[in-house]
Image 1 (cartoon, rainbow, N blue to C red):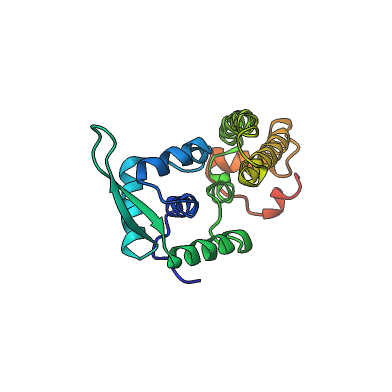
Image 2: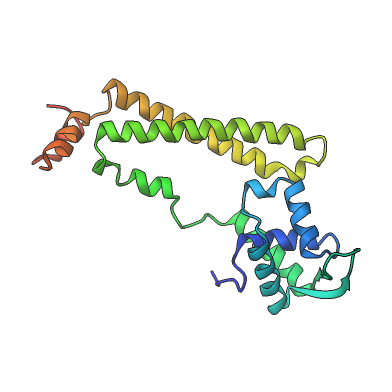
Amino acid sequence: MNRRKVANVLGLAVLSVVQERPMHPYEMAAVLKQRGKDADMPIKWGSLYTVVANLEKHGFVEAVENVKDGGRPERTVYRITAAGRAEFEDWVRELVGTVDREPPRFKAGLSLIGVLGPDQAISRLRERLGQLDERVEARRAELEQLRPLMPRMFLVEVEYDIAMTDAEARWVRGFLDELTSGTLPGIEAWRRWYETGEPPQDLGEFVEEK
C-alpha cells in the first residue's frame, strides 16, 4: 500500500466537504462540527490550516478567491481539484475495503495484561467499561439529534461507532465477570505470578487449576 501524500484523517474530512462546494477553512470547520465529525477527530484551527495547506501543496485543492466579510480578516476559498476527487475516492475505497493491519491500542494492552495482575486488571477494566458505557450513551443522544437534520447515509459511521463500542463493552463486561467470579482458567496462577514475580514452571497452570 502506497503512503499517501496527506495521510491525516482531517485531510479526508476536508476533501469530503469541499467536494460539495468551494469553502474557506472557517466554513469547512463549521460544516464538519455541524455534522458531528468533531466527535471522531479533533478540529483545531492550527491543524486545519496546516492540512488545507498540504492539500493545496499536493494539488488536491486550489484557491479560487479571497472573500472579506465585514471587519473580519480576508479568507481564502478553496475548491477540490480533479486530482483531489480521485484521491478522495481512492482513500475511501481503501478505508472501506481494507482491514487495518495496525492492532488497536486496547488489543495491544490485552496481550500484555498479565503484567498487571488480576486485581489491577479488574480495576482498570471497570474504569474502561464505565467510559465505554458513557460513550455509547453520548453517541446515541448525538445520533438522535442529528437524524432530523441529515440523511442516514451521512450518519452510518456514528451507527457503526455505537455498535462497535457497545460490542466492546459487552466483551469487557463478560471478561470482568470471569475475573471477579474467579472462573477465568489460571487466575490463581496469574495472581501468584504477579505477587511473587516467579513465573510458573508449568504453563498448564494457566489452562486448568491444579
